[in-house]
Image (cartoon, rainbow over all chains, first blue to last red; front, side):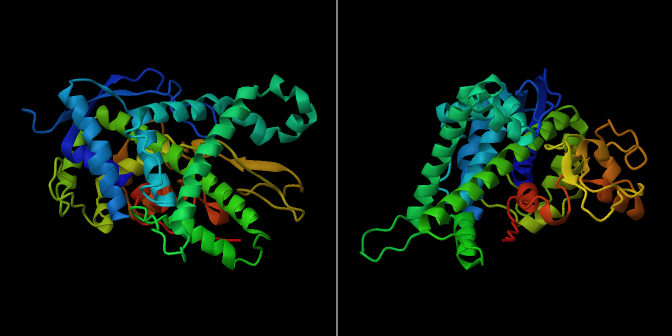
Length: 48
Length: 342
């Protein structure tokens, strides 16, 4: 995970577009109830 | 391992993010994260050229993620009510629809395809025909296969050996992709709500030598130990695993015949089912004040003693002899201690 996350956050910013159903489901492996998370990625050097 | 990481990161994963920026579109990171973890896991187990490519093969990705996801509700019956299911016999579809068994067969058959590809890559050829070398070795396949051969309880036949190996690897694969995928999602969700933290994290990440900059001509990566030394990265991951343990529920055991006490309880009789849940342990307000708050600073702005106590209550990977075998791999993706007990 560290490698993937380091690669993302060195180069991009992320923001939430749609996080409905993000709560953990009640099951053995518990991912988001809605099984989705919509984010927007932007480059750091994009005029920020 | 390095080549595996480079391929998945620079050839598959990051280009997808770049594409979303170019198209000015948003991204559903849930399937993206599951694809990344599945591709890494299967490449590590079977070799890069034999593993999955869910990041780029969208149709296959959609097909299998749907299979895994839709049947989740029914896993309960197999896990907790196995005898009831066998009692029901032909009436089993009352509880578990027929398509669930079909879904499991499809997943197993896809898994066996990769398994056989790795198997052919691993066997030495004496006939002089061209031996297919997978890009990166099937590390886990080789390791587990050899361990099985060495073990005292080795299977009788080659077929049994292969079946046992495939089955064990499927377990590792299933375990490996979903949990890390879930954690990545919750991590991204939290960071997305904390832009100042993203800046702080980026400053820390830029101290890496080399930093993981993209696009890149060199595709160079920092040493895994350098990644491990980053305290904010570590704290944010720990806090995500604390608040959103991917396996939050009960880890049950049955009390033995000698009276046992648990957490200073009076001695418990034999045959009692007891369990602890990461969900609950991680919300002990005495150890984790404001437990429902995602606050990575709690791991940083703390005394040595209180940090040790927090780590004692941290149970996302379990503990003891059956603790998560892939925890270092999951957190790092580089250091993978593979200890086999047969």
